[in-house]
Length: 125
Image 1 (tube, rainbow, N blue to C red):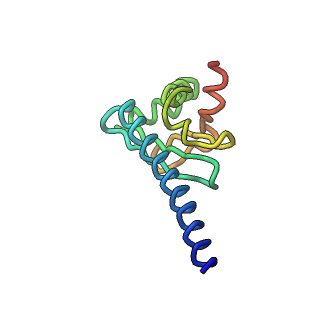
Image 2 (cartoon, rainbow, N blue to C red):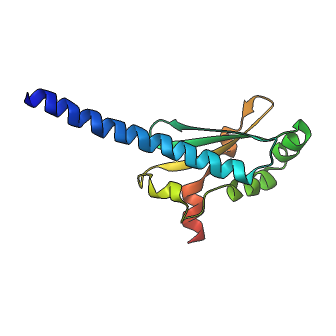
Image 3 (spheres, rainbow, N blue to C red):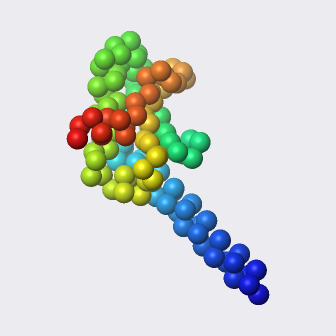
């Protein structure tokens, strides 16, 4: 009987953690889609448990390539998409977790162009 109760408690805790992860994905997706042009693609997912990774694909291609080959403008654009310090998504994330925004252009992901939103937010304070 104790084992059944313990299993039930573990299942409740696990489902609450999973719901929290899904909520963060939904919140960030909605936030980013409200800030990007309608044609841009936004994909948000958890990566390695501590990064909420948002992949941004600008459209049309010309706009994407213009950003890709202007690193300072690309960084500025991606940084501007980071949720502000008081955004609800931060309140459901653990302190060690980060939101990372990366560009994708022509099927290539710009790992070197990734922006750590936690770092951006901490620099603003």
